[in-house]
Amino acid sequence: MTTAPDDFGFGLPFDRAGTGSSKWARTAGGPDGVIALGLADMDLPGPPAVAEALARRARHRAYGYTVCDPAGRALVADWYRARHGVAVDPAWVLLLPFGPRTAVRLLLEAVRPAGPVLFPTPEWGGFAQLCRAARLPYREIPLVHDGNDGTGDRTGTGYRLPLDAFARHRPGAVLLSSPHNPSGRVWTAAEIHGLAEAAARAGGVLLSDEVHGDLTHPGHRHPVAVAVAGPLRDRTVTLNSVGKTFNTSGIPSCFALVPDPALRGRLGEVMAGYGLWEGGLLEQVVQRAALRHGGPWLDALLRHLATARDELTAVLGDAVRSAPQASYLLWLDAAALGLPAADARAALLERCALEVSDGADFGPGGRGGLRLNYALPGPELARALARLARLRKP
Figure 1 (cartoon, rainbow, N blue to C red):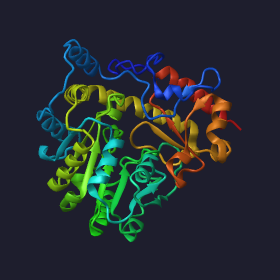
Figure 2 (cartoon, rainbow, N blue to C red):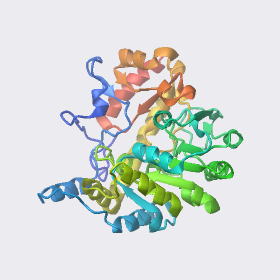
Figure 3 (cartoon, rainbow, N blue to C red):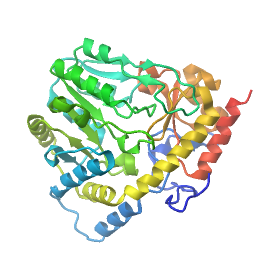
Figure 4 (cartoon, rainbow, N blue to C red):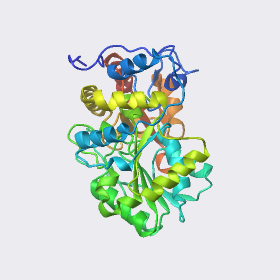
């Protein structure tokens, strides 16, 4: 891969040794030279503006209780208008000093779903864990797979949402990662509206986890749930975070778009019961710097990711279950790679020294799959490609 002058060092080696990286800790006990491709964070240098803002704040040696900056709500609204062409009322915005996983858990408590919680499979495994922790009944709805030629074609092949099945089970809440985790599929506006309608008809709420939404690849458009829900927006919540977009998940924060004032009030009460309030010291520093100054960095990142995606899909072909349209995740069919479905993750680690996520972590629909994170600097991506190419040779 070549290094463009504006790529912020994405084409250069980037060493995370000594940073306590959870992603690289997963490789412990693996073969020498293993490359970590499992956990969903990026092995790329983050925005300079975030590093500068943190250093500047750290120099002031008062780190006490911090009020929520109300200007942060307008900043989020400005981001949605500029990046997505969506009008967000700043009054809808809650600035939360914890990650999206915690936000989903607290929202479920605030929603008080009367029916089952529904979400697709395969899907991010945190939804099932959170429902079990909340002692809520849940059902995993199998996604429909339309097939994919694995060439990197981005015309909509792969997964789609079975809207009739969601409506039939009368959800108390619908949970969705949008874009899809693990495949990187961008759901259509019609699909998102259909889920909002299925939830609203049953008196439920759609909770759309859109932490990968700002990572939509060139040529695709991310439908923001509270916008495409239209008149159903009071039964819809959008969650987002600078964490995935700008690789700052180690300082957990997120923001929720909650048009319904009653639900916003209940969420505030639930948070207070756990000793949580809007704002946060470092969280707000990171959010402000990323949303105000991170646009050029993000544009360069998206170009880098699109190039990496194309190189990988060209090598892996029909092993790609659904051509990615967003983020940095590649969803693979273990059998098409010549790996045993029951133990594909261990087999890939042994044969190629590549550590990935096991498809079984994404529910019943994920069995026999592997999720690979390709947010890598140029030299590391080249090494991973060479190892994967060996699997495709006859």
